[in-house]
Length: 201
Image 1 (cartoon, rainbow, N blue to C red):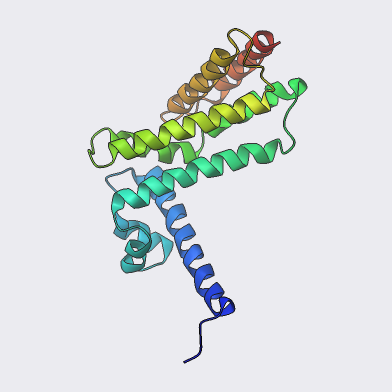
Image 2: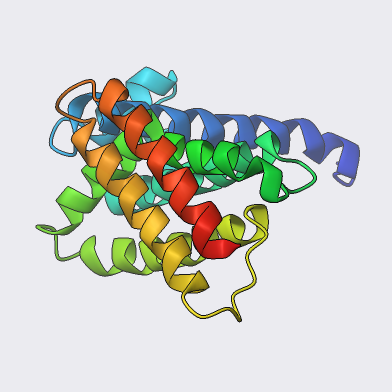
């Protein structure tokens, strides 16, 4: 039998990556729609169109699958935000950046992440993993916000202003879970844009 070449390996690796991607996307959708209790590996694998065995090959445990799903969510959110402002945003675009940051916390990706937070508060195996992941996600989101808002963090209060903006955005996302809060949210975002502009100079 001849040696396995790189060209032979590539289609198999591509299929493996595609399967993993489908599983992550299905896990996010299931968490957003059904919550932790209704999002089993079987449900996710069926939605992804792959066998349970294939799912467990990529993610041996349920915790592995959903922790990876939230990490995927975080990466997608960061990529989406950077995609809106590919060359960075100057001070003139701060209102648009504030709106984009708020939008990160009002869509299905945030809803899926929130379901995992709730589950982690009651699941000892999941809690430490999600806490570590969210700490990392929080640092990355803060870093992106500082970059896009062109913040000089050496200015007194600048770091706290950015953190307050992210906390406000998360709160608006939570409020949006129960009711469509778009009208009030628009007013709050408009006011925060002025506050941020004043505080950051």
